[in-house]
Amino acid sequence: MSPNRKSKENRNGKKSVKRVALITGASAGIGLACARRLAKDGCSLVLVARRLEALKKLKSSLEKAYPGISVKVFKLNLADSADVKVWQKEHRVLLESVDILINNAGLAKGTDKIQDLQWSDAEAMIEVNMKGLLRFALPVIKTMAEKKSGHVVNLGSVAGRWVYPGGSVYCATKFAVRALGEAMRQDLLGRNVRVTNIEPGMVNTEFSTVRLGNKDLADKVYEKMTPLSGDDIAESISWCVNLPPHVNVQELVIYPTDQAHVGVGMVHRNI
Ligand code: 8X3
Image 1 (cartoon, rainbow, N blue to C red):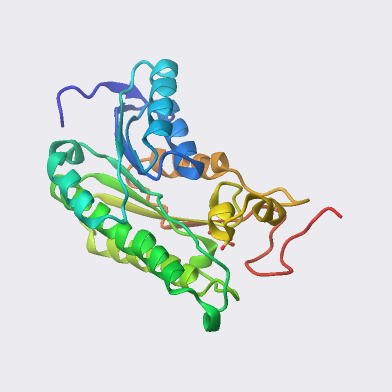
Image 2 (cartoon, rainbow, N blue to C red; image 1 turned 60 degrees about the vertical axis):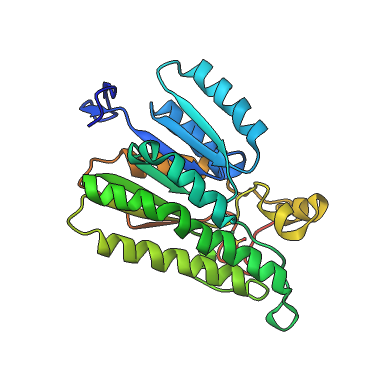
């Protein structure tokens, strides 16, 4: 245990060690909400994303609100394998200090059916959601296994349990996230490392704007219904990582009340 980690009371009234959470895609949406929530829980943070300015703002607001924690921020694109390798080499000691890894960075591009699929969209999703997650997470998982402690939280999706028309490759990447998470949990048996897959339905973040390439179209996705927020998902992640160490939530499927399932016709709208 590193000597500068201070003891504090957790929500069960037991002494716990201040933990370090590393969050990818932390500049917006679910990643940003997780940063705020885990800072509130007393975690120090390592935040990575492509938008450094947004991360710097977040760092200063969190360090002001929670003076007991430290927040380190880094510009990194998980799709850039060479950059990720260099960054991992430069920050080996920091990576060894990570207790909670939240593999949040991911995206959807397009809603074309398979016969019309844009190859560039498919590649972008595979590159970040699968290859990016793995290339970033592997060294952290290795150190967790060695020190016999840690918690890996993967951001999957309901699209990783059920497919829908126009979602082929996005669904495939999220099925892969679920498979990888489950394999991690099995491989890490005996290493005291927890692995949790979080599988949200409709969450109102930049997700649909990125997917559809247009904010007006994205707003229509959430029209006259109440979607989940990034904070809703962050709250569930906080619950998972703050449970006693012998408890591992394998996966959580979280829909908004107004969504019954993936796909068209499964959303209740107040019209
Ligand atoms: C996003 C959920 O239903 O838009 O991961 O595919 S959905």
